[in-house]
Figure (cartoon, rainbow, N blue to C red):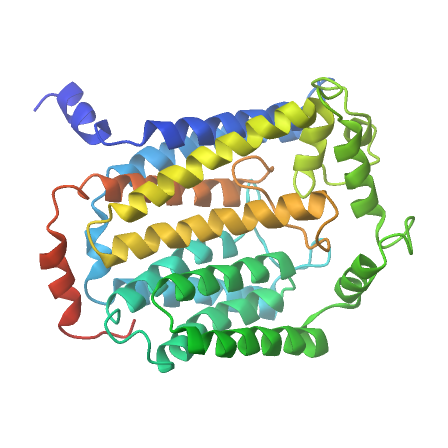
Length: 382
């Protein structure tokens, strides 16, 4: 087979629509964070990470991911990525109040972004092997234990935003795996218990203050709610058509802090207005629709659950980020997929999208009933 034929074979099933939407979102993020004045390190670095991320997507889309269903692969991945989370809590260096990154000199690695994908793999494998007896409440607690270990280690960094994402991924996958309605109360109580534990032992004082000031948003505009207030001003000032690319006063004049990361949606809305926000939501809608489509065409329960997990992963980031930027949720510091500055989350998101594209390559040819029988025989650690 020639090189051209090999490339054509590997890219024949690539989900070009979702990739195109993701790259467009990344480019819109680049335009928003660009200062248009002299050298902009955020713009240059992010452009490099986008190129690398697209490369990761194509590599992942060419892999046959069926090996994740067998043996103890998911357990090995899970255990391997728990280790760096423990290391961060024990001896990580704090930056902006959180021990969430390993400083590699040329690149600051944030392990939790990849742990989210591994958690989705672990939960997808666990639920796919137990789909017949999933209504047994013990599976809520066993799967919850996998998620809670990650949740606790991330909350102790402290990275409250990522901890919420971890919980929402687990909650979404539990609900869609066939949970009995009578057990929904147990899930709700488990969530309340986790929140109470964090409030008493996990949250830093500034995190408690953010939640309390959310209940009284105008109590301390110059202090605890300054970021949230400036964000809502930026979103509202965009009006219908926006102020124009590069003319956002809240962001470019630095009234809005962290506009390249935690508040990039607000900076975008200020420059592009309501019409631009509709475009943005449409692009995310395309990605969510394509992921849901892949979930319905999954070759087995594992692929279906993995796709749903990625949907909850992207959806949780999207809803939290936009909700925070519009003043509807307390400030927790979360990125929005493909747009916010940062290499770790960008690589993880393109990796997840590429894995879905790779799984879609064998979705039609697989015999679902035969694969389902594979999951009925035998259990493993996950």
